[in-house]
Structures are given as C-alpha cells and as structure tokens.
Image 1 (cartoon, helix red, strand yellow):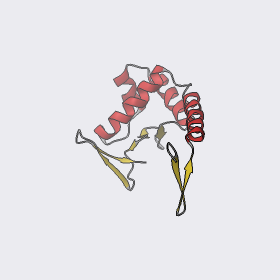
Image 2 (cartoon, rainbow, N blue to C red; image 1 turned 90 degrees about the vertical axis):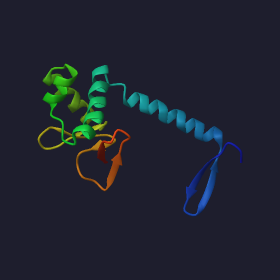
Image 3 (cartoon, rainbow, N blue to C red; image 1 turned 60 degrees about the horizontal axis):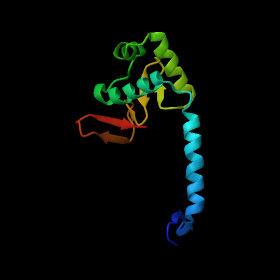
Image 4 (cartoon, rainbow, N blue to C red; image 1 turned 30 degrees about the vertical axis):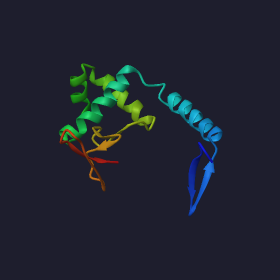
Length: 125
C-alpha cells in the first residue's frame, strides 16, 4: 500500500492509510501547540539556556545563575521554572530547587548517556 505507515503489532505489520495518519499527526500538532501556548519569550529563553548549560557545566543550575545570565530577576526565573515544572514541560528541579534536568539532558546519573559534537557530555532522562 503506497503512502502507508506501517504499525508493528507483535510480529505483524499493519498498514495505516495516509489519510488516517495525516489526520492523527495534524491533531497531535494542534495539541502540542496548545500545550505550549502558556510559554512567553522568557519561558523559552530559560528553557533553552538550561538545556545548553547543563551539559556545559555538568552541575545543577540555581535560579540565581539563570537570572544573572539572562538578565532577569530571580523571582521571575523562579516563577518561570515553577510554571515549566507545573506543566510537566522541559524542566525538573531537585530538592534544593535547582534545575537538575532540562529535557533532553540531565546532570543526574541515568543509564542513558549523550555526547555532543562540542565535546560536552550529559545524561538523558
């Protein structure tokens, strides 16, 4: 079947017609966009910074360090981190309220290890 997506179920491959999988992908795209609609430009800046810095530093990131690097206030960064974490989006803070992971990287030891072309290394959640 041309333009089908093959879905593996056990040892069987079931063709899913293009018309069906395209509808599913469009619906999922809408849900993804709606799920991120709460994010401001500052939310994206904080998230992007943590993803880049965790592998570089190899250590958890304190809100104060994030605020200083991005020229934001500490209360603003704390509020953004709380919102990102509450939406189960991108970040997790440990017991000391520091960022320990920002998807797709973490400083917590996991079985998943990533190496970057820049030479940096990190674990993946």
